Length: 237
Image (cartoon, rainbow, N blue to C red; front, top):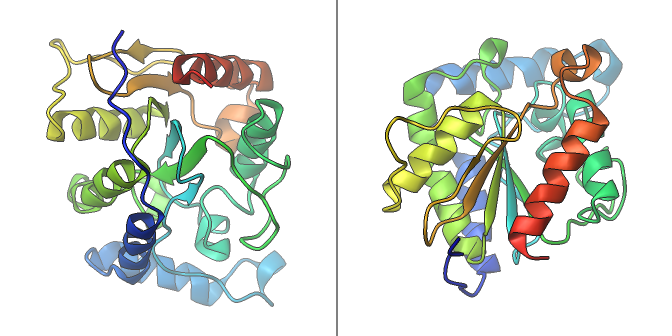
């Protein structure tokens, strides 16, 4: 299996992507919804000021592993301004990242809580919280350049861990846009699925750490630990 050629990470380029994500108003439906959620707020957070904007990726500029989710949570990242932060999905994910040696602490509560990622970067296919967690195809398409720019700025990505089927499809589309067209028939998403294309990051699939999946046992800590361990091995950390 051929790894992508290493490149120097660019923290400045990542900062520029973050600036553009935060300022983006390209999707009227998503802008209206993220701001409505931030205005009405959940009772438990009624005294907090919600972020209510696009949410950029977060993590190590020298990351070899990118975790790609679906979208910010309504009262998680849309409230805190950091991916998978402040809700049950984030509690499950960052605990696993900590066990894998990729996160400095097992919880991600707020953007200023001191959490540091090592060798990993967390982002999403859609940067604004969508109604019913269902971004439209045109909304995903408008967000796609942000993912391309983040991965280019990271430089040395060896593994993309897609959290859910929408993230898997977004990663396949990214590979195609960057000259690494997936084989036919189109590789299907599944927990533990892998796709290796020469000179491109290896794509690995995992069920999304949503409450629906973790509370029903569809995704267990052991299952996520195993996928993360595989990603670490593939990344050569």
